[in-house]
Length: 315
Image 1: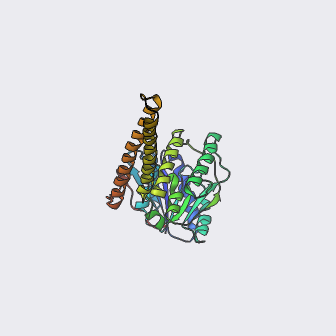
Image 2 (image 1 turned 180 degrees about the vertical axis):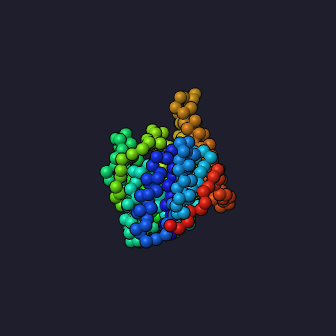
Image 3 (image 1 turned 90 degrees about the vertical axis):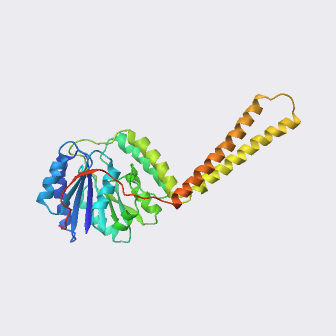
């Protein structure tokens, strides 16, 4: 079964048309399919449209959050609620073309675990495309996964990938990188990007600095997430070396220079003591992080779902 997950936030004008296009594309692939809309706290009547589509088509289902939790939360809830062994994600604004679904399936069948979309000709304003290119370059360099469009909403991946993804905050931007870090085979294909026919983008300038901070977090988690002491302990040892060198130089100055303390001596004392204190704190953080990893306490995420249509069924 194909499970198609569509996060929705104030996109009521696009939903009926999107459903019709998805149904046409999926009816030609020869597999059962389900379509799940996740209403991420919409206030424009999107939930009413989803309910109407679910009543008309047994392949359609919906989840509704009590408030806006973000795209990562919507995708995480959708992954929990669907049953398909192959999962598609796409945006609700009609910029992702559902006719690409067979191409994704073909590429996935070549032995890949995740196929990411690549909007070669992106129909967005320059203030979104230019920073996006810089962001994608940074993600590729820091994660070791070279893709042109990490944050493309159009993705196809196997259920095994979903089982190992932990989506929260705004980590939806890094699904390919997170899958790659777990050893899954990731690739990309070019997709047809369309202009937005209704509404406007929900993302502002704040996404850039948030994305950078999330990138640093993902970088740390994918490289040292299972061995935090290697990073924090190494930083602690470096701080110890710097602190001891500073205090050593201060001691030598006291032995050979004599006289009252100079400004440079105060600086060396501050540098030495400060680095030794920093080393102690870094080592303690690394030790605590190792204890947390050794004794995990997992619990399912609660996104406060207010309503749910009947579960999606095969089409």
